[in-house]
Amino acid sequence: MKKVIGMLALIALVGNIANAELLKNFKYDGKIEVNAFQVKDTDYNKNAADKTNDVDTRVQINAGFDLTEDVDAVVSIVKNNEQYGDAGRGEDANTIMDNMFFEQAYLNLKGVLGFDHKLGRQYYGNEGDLIVYYGPQGWPYTSAMNRNAIDGYTGWYKTGKWDFHGILAKDADTNLVGDNDEDIFGLNAKYDLMEEVKLTGYFYRYNEQSGTAFAGPADHLDTFGVKAMGVFKGFEYNAEVAKNMGKNNRLINNVGGAATNDYTGMAFLANAKYGMDLAGKITFMGEFAMGSGDDNVAATDDEAASFYSPNSDYRPGILWGGSHLSVIGGAGLSNLTTFNLGAMWNPSNAEKLTLGAKYFNFSPTEKLTGTAKSYDTYGNEFDLCANWQHNESVGLKAYYAMFMPDKDYAQRNSLTASDDSTEILGAAFSVKF
Image (cartoon, rainbow, N blue to C red; front, side, top):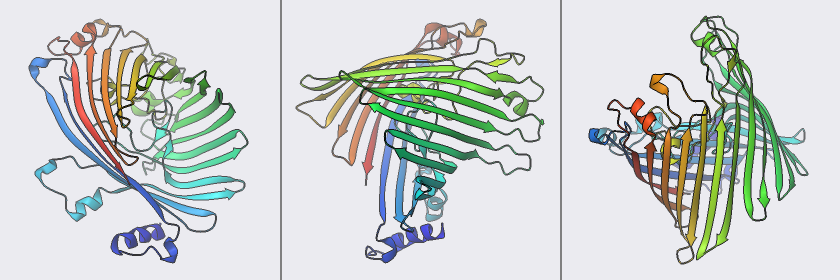
C-alpha cells in the first residue's frame, strides 16, 4: 500500500515522470459525473408545493501498475460528497482529502495455481444485478450517487466455455468484542453453450453475526439461482430464477426474544428486446419481475417469505429506482411485482442521439392487510430520456419521469388523502478520461 500511495503522490507532485522505471506499465482512467435534478410532490399533494433541487457530483480515478511479472496493483479513488451550492463556498485542501476514499486497493495475482486472485478492497458484480453488486452506482442515481465495495478475496478461472469465480469477503466489520460482522461468500459458474444460450448458476451466503447483545445465533441468508441469456432470431433475452434459504435470526439479534424462522422467498426476472431498422435503429423492450412477499409478518411465523438479496442493484424506473419516492422504491424485489414496456430510437440523421420511453407498473406481490394498508397497486411510472453521446468520452442525458400513485395507496400514505403525481426533471453529464 505504501508503494501504491507513493506512486500516486509522485504523479501528483512531478510533472514529467513518464519514463520512470517504476511507472513504465502505469495505466489510469477515470470519470467525472454531474447529476442535476428537481423532484416535486413526493407526498402526492401538489398543493403543498414541495420541491427538492440538487446538483450532485462524483469523481472516480482508477490506477494500476505492475509490481512483478505476475502481480499488479489497482487503486480507485472516489469523491462524491459535494453538491453545488453546498455551504456557499469551496472546499479547502483538508476537507477535500477527508472526502477522498480509496474504494479499491487490491493486488491481482495472475495465474497462481492456475487461476487469478484479487486480494484487498474491490468492486464485485455487475450494475443492475438482482442478487449482488458492490461498486459505483449507475444511473438512475440516488441523490447521493452512492458507491461501496467489499474487503476480501475473489478468485477467477476460465477454461474452454466455462467461467468460474468465487468470493469470500467482509461487508461490514464492527470491531467489537461481540462479533456483529457481516460477511459474504459464494460461487458463480457460467457456461457459454452457444450464442442462443448462455447458462449461469450461483450460490451466495450473507452471514450476519449476532454479537452479544441478545446472545442469538447468526443470521444467514442463502440465495441459489440460475440464469439463461442469449440471442434467438434477433431477440436478446435474459431470464433468472432465485430462491432463498437459511435462518432469519435478525429479530433475535436486533430486537431480542422473538422466534427465529426460515428464509423461503423466491424471485423471477425475465426481459427481452428486439431491434430493427426504421429511419435509424429502433429497439423495443419489455420486462417482468416478481419477488415473493409475506402475508404474515407476526414474530411467531415460521417463515420469512419475502425475497431478499445480499446486496441487490435491481432498480427499475427513474423515480422508483432512484429512491425519489417516499416510503416505497429503491433496490430489490422484496414483495414487489413489476413490469415495464419501452422503446429506444437512434435516428439515422442524428447518430449521436438516442430517445427512449418506458412505462412501469409496480404492485405488492402479497396484498398488505389492515385498513391503513388495503391496496393492490403502488402505481405506475412513465419515463422519458434523451441521450447525446458526443464521443466515447463525453455523454449528456436529459430525463423526465412521472409516478402516478394508485388512488388507494396514495390516500393511505398522504396526510391530505391526495393522489397527485410525483415528478422529476433532470440532466446528467459524464466525462471519461
